[in-house]
Image 1 (cartoon, rainbow, N blue to C red):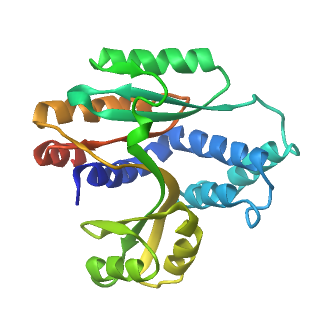
Image 2 (cartoon, rainbow, N blue to C red; image 1 turned 180 degrees about the vertical axis):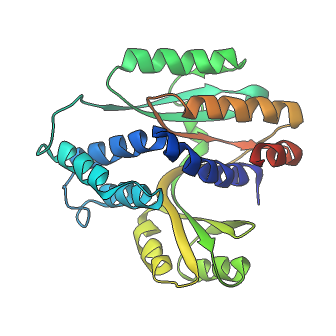
Length: 251
């Protein structure tokens, strides 16, 4: 498994713990609300909303929370702040490209906190396009194999239309074309031998930057710090992390 893919998988497992603190639930609710506001409030007619709801369910978010977030976005629930989607770019330790996707009700605050977090880590706040040219929008699915060989399950996903996969223990991270995400997700969901952990739209780097142990540790801390910011929804990088640093991070 490549370094950036392994980080993504470890990060997802750690995210389950964040849900207990309420941090993840807040961000999931915000994504559901914005998805419902941007399209139909029926998840069967709004792919982004369906993904947001599925991900919330995978993190054991209560049904009432999900319904309130949908109602708020559809305009039938309690009124609240209007969130704006803003993407920031930065250069981290070792020249790593970082993309930060936010949902914010105060873009000045959002820009300031993202900028200060990057610069404190020795990185640089970059202009639009400085990093994103190297990333491509893809579909990404994470599954946990409960019965059988993860490698075989992963290969089956290729037959279903996936482009690539990475295996980490019993976890398989599948990458596909954005347009194929819904179809592949449905095929995987009916398999008795797997549990669908996550299905989302992700930014995948076309080329990566290999980091040494020290650079990896600094970058891992930076990515964690960025994801802990209230306005930040997702963070992507093109880092290939040092294996020893990743193993320590997973503990």
